[in-house]
Length: 68
Image 1 (spheres, helix red, strand yellow):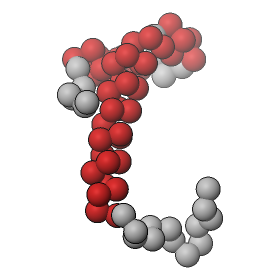
Image 2 (image 1 turned 90 degrees about the vertical axis):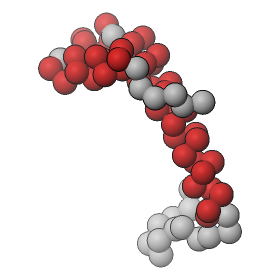
Image 3 (image 1 turned 90 degrees about the horizontal axis):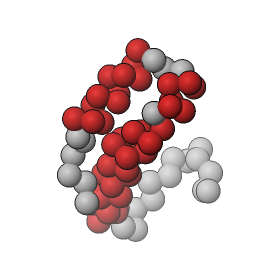
Image 4 (image 1 turned 180 degrees about the vertical axis):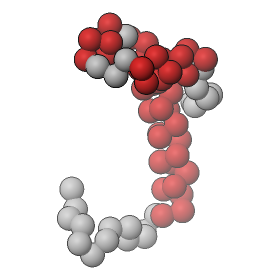
């Protein structure tokens, strides 16, 4: 269940803004996984369920898109 982003998530995003490099990411990967990725995945899961309720049976593919 998505409960929002914590202060820790916002802190991570602020920190990575000024340290956007592999060294910083590797040292802070657990922060990212816990405070950003997990809540974002929960949000996407919930949005997906909500969107699917409105799109059941709808063809959302553009004419140029290929099915995956």
